[in-house]
Image 1 (cartoon, rainbow over the protein chains, first blue to last red):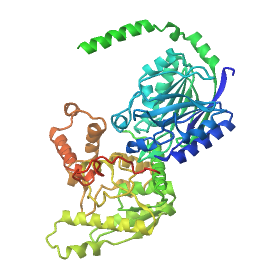
Image 2 (cartoon, helix red, strand yellow):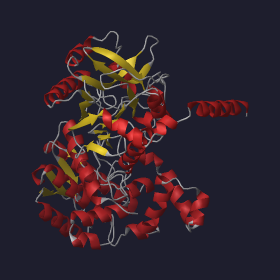
Image 3 (cartoon, helix red, strand yellow):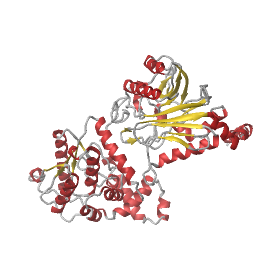
Image 4 (tube, chains in turn cyan, purple):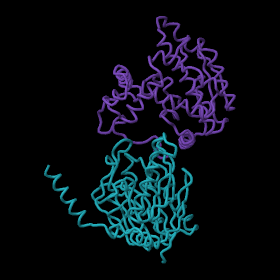
Length: 287
Length: 270
């Protein structure tokens, strides 16, 4: 593959707790993304299940190593890579808010959400276990990093992904809109845009952000899915708060160029960061 | 307090459409009082669903002011929604015939609950859900009748303060006579919300926004110039009306109780 490829952000509205219907939604969307020429299609957080699951979590959980229900989805990934969100159950009966990267007919990587918001309207830690690992996955688009929603609000996650070689970072999101007292859309949507632009520019990577549409008990998901390039520019974004498929062509050479002009990654001092972090952790445990 | 009216309008219309259709409905019934809250709810529903899918019910009592009815009619005419007048006088007076000592508060509550009975009955007839008309100021102050005007299936304006309702009403082009008049529950002649509450909506909305939305501390509120007794009055009202914002208390006996740890959204499976 050349350095150019097409991504599709599937801004869908899954139904709460209805795996079968949502699976069909994925298959239909994948087919559409394929016909639009996409090489990678990205779904939002918990796209197979809906977001505010609460006690539904164990009922919709999937063991990715033994999941007949995923077979059709895996087959669909033979000629298009796909990232989707689901509830993973582990062999210890822990439940994770997870994202899978599937390609060539199999699951290549699973990311478990690291930061579970449990404040305000969010209650994730009550129902999910925290992920413990952050790894990139090898793909035809170079090393790729997955993050889920709140993960990105801890920029250390993106920092680690990028240091681990990621050129493309995918954030799956189910972020409800909040704050209607400013001129430009939800306050939360503005927050995401600022974050994505700034982080793309700081880390000279592509950030793919897929947020869902629809509504769950009055929690309104305003979409706003977007692709931000390595100098912080919005390359493509959804123009509707409803369901949408956002297409964008990415060019890895843009990353090379961005890093020529702004070689902040080259100059990053991991040893310094690590040293100081170690000191801070030690001091905190002693105080 | 600014309000992004185009955004709020778009979101609330989606809200009405989506929450309704998920539950298998495409129509609403709304009680039109002639006041600004029910006018705004009705405007949002009519724009979201089409006027043919909105049934506005006007429910005067014998002491209701004639302006209330004419203002409600102005909303019906402006939108072209379906409408009906159901007098509640006989329902209310029929009950109070044998309750001669009832004060105006009891009578007012009974009127609000009589209207609730009509609306939920009409919702069956019209194959619709009852649209709520309680705003955030009322909900927080408990300035409404439990199982009366506070009862509904979906409420598009429950997260908007009274000041926001005025802004949205202007944006939606609610009839001018409704924008101009003083808010009243119209349960008895000459009643005024602000006289009854003892403060203005403008004052209390500003305080509620600081207290609830921004979680500003008591010390900061005093520094901002809010009077101590006013803060206390409002805080007491909020605390004293918490029961109106929650379902009935159930005693926990089993490992998993409907009221305590049975966590499912209403949109479960929709």
